[in-house]
Image 1 (tube, helix red, strand yellow):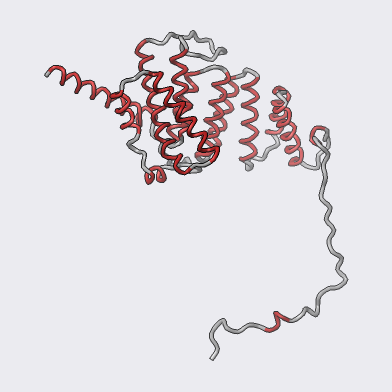
Image 2: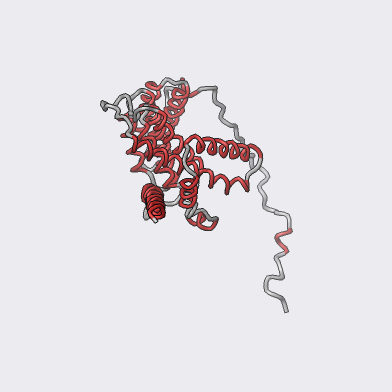
Length: 311
């Protein structure tokens, strides 16, 4: 009795008798290109080759800081990109937005970012768009809009300590400058910070530095080499900044309690949204998730202290 699968066909070990001996092996020669070939190419086999040539040319010009010429090539390339090729379309639109930003055309750059938002399908795309908007606002000195972008990044990636550090430094800038920074190309008069606004910015900076410190403390357990060194330097920077803010120990303790409520490994894994589809994705507003809760907690603590003093 044969066991199923225990036998094999002996013919698989026999030499092939019908192998063609006259077949000439295929000769392959790799195509070689001269350095910067796309700078001189004027004839194209098809629209795809023309699109690639214009894209390479625009990227080089952008690197060489010839932004107007790069913008012209990016714009020409965009008209050649098929509607189905979303990855190249996003890349070209980002190049256009960055050229507009360097040329001082901030409104055009932000309008291009709006087009990119419409093309976004997952959180990775949205993260890139927010970082692009952040660089545009920073480039024209619009500190309040930069802060708003960083708040969105923290809401989208609540366990990324580097977004929290940048947001904390953004609040610090509000404290260091006597006026609220506005984009110089906007026809708006800068308004001086009131004392209440300064107190709020100081507390928000403290909140972000503490959140970053907590996250780095969790992550550095798994880090080595230069990554660990970077984390240690960031922790030292956060500690120095907290001391300069000159907040009381009671306040810092309350802030630490509120900002650490969701920091446990299981929840951090569950709420990791890298690459997640935007359809049905729920992102809690920054103020609703952290600031409002912290403000209410501090207000309650002050009331309790006042009641104790009355007794």
